[in-house]
Image 1 (cartoon, rainbow, N blue to C red):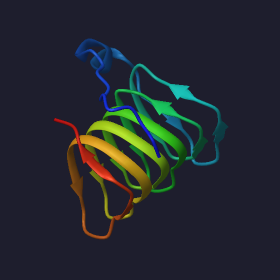
Image 2 (image 1 turned 180 degrees about the vertical axis):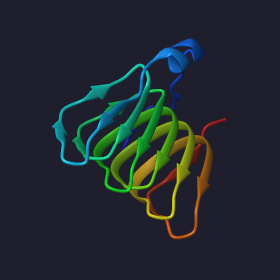
Image 3 (image 1 turned 90 degrees about the vertical axis):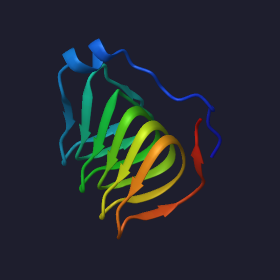
Image 4 (image 1 turned 135 degrees about the vertical axis):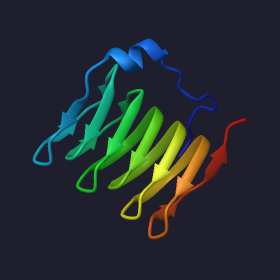
Length: 119
């Protein structure tokens, strides 16, 4: 699971001013998704996701790469992750290499892959 060694940077103004986008639980997207604002995934995405803030809800699944400043995972990701701040909740299932600055893994979260801290 190769990935670049640089972490994403979104300007604060873009993160603060953009609307929140939601992929509903009954929705499947096949392809790459980019958002200028917060992005909640309750359904399934097969492809890459790029947004300043990404939340993968308990019902959410990403099969591909996730690139974000802030990533919260309650659902599942298989692929690769590049994010400054990563939080894996108790129901998270992550099968990915994760490049991060800070990571928090709650008890019960399942993590399989390489964790690499970017300095």
